[in-house]
Length: 600
Image 1 (cartoon, rainbow, N blue to C red):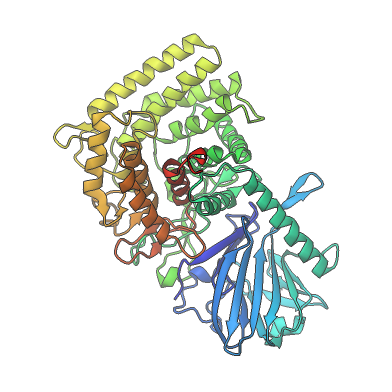
Image 2: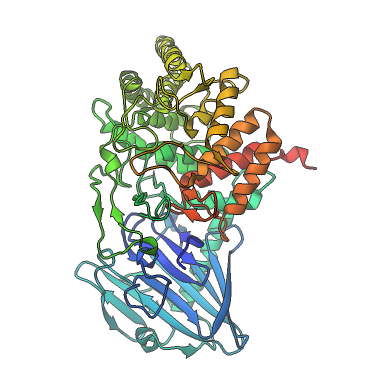
């Protein structure tokens, strides 16, 4: 059955999802938000059948009479290794990677996937099935071949496979004995500048070396190092480095729960999500991602005019994200529709102003960054601050992007306050006492208003909407965002009430009331991790550890998490891999881990 037990390989230009049997099931081209040339993940055939032409859009390496397989990452890298075993004890190894390394003092990150296949035991027979699709699954390419390549053509795009395997066997999908290693280089219709084997080996060595050096520079917590490293690499792969954008996930339309039509396109950049990503990576020392993202939001701020921001942008800052369907794809397990674009770009989400200011705050305080904060940038941020003042007490769609219910959401107000609070702190760094005083006064005013209207005396808890009586998991961030101290009785009682209301087993729902699609069925992964952090801040570390370990057990075999987890079955649902979820894992690991000096 198609599932989310997938690994990801990528290079911050493209990313491919590979299952545990070495089948590439998803991958956009020629960038993270591009049309999927591999779309079997959303093809809809159940169960997956390689001989079914309707389940197109994949790249499989099949071992004849295969009985089992196992996959793992090459140590501290984004390179996947899959071993396939057959009933006759023959074994092959498939190495998958997307090249990424320094070349001529620049990052070399082509839209290209490399597959290296090695015979390890016996006389294995393999079959290569390369079936790209164009037009969101609707167009099968024309095929032509040469002595060492196969070309896949449509009216708009031509892709090329360069290989030292028998080309005719690949075109005919005919099995053959693998008696020596073969290499498959798939990407744009360009010839290689050197031999196939030499190129594949050199690319592999330099790509592994790049990632291992990148990991070596991270400041990971003492405990859960492997889990943290995998989360950090995965977050980096969600970064479209050309512009600095960070996508919320690498997929579209994986349902949040079975049969619900909660299917959304997450291959876009939400400033809210991106702030949490760069904040987490910056804590680890991956400052380059922060700098690149600051370039992205600086451009957004510069073209915002009077300061009005969208809640979500395309990875090149596009604001035309009209939602449409891809009718040729039946959807994940046949659960369509498959959506392209996200109508949330039209919504009012007032937290966006605080999100952008919070992200930009780092550039004024972090001395490791080459790009430092300037007075000009601060003045642009003040424009956003004035927008925050205007909208902090106005209805919006909120953090959870409700499509038909507007209210004054406490989290949105909280983020507006955070923006004003940080503007005051930045003014102190820039030696602007008048501006520091002004923004401190406004932040205090917003703080008082939120404390009055967002607090429910009867429940002894902050609530989701002003003067409301329901809670959502975002209230667990009241301390994380410095609105309340950890020992504030209001925070303590809010955490208690949120846990009592939203906890389902060892997972947390985002809210427990009906929305546009009914009652939520699955737990939003990061909400449980927010709860873990809140418990830890209250000194309830043993409880936090139990829940954190439970989340770690929910990761797939590659160490990755999706957007949602079903509380009963434990199955992963929602878009994948979800940046938010990996951020939560990093933050909780850092909070709960022993310090290095305490461990010896």
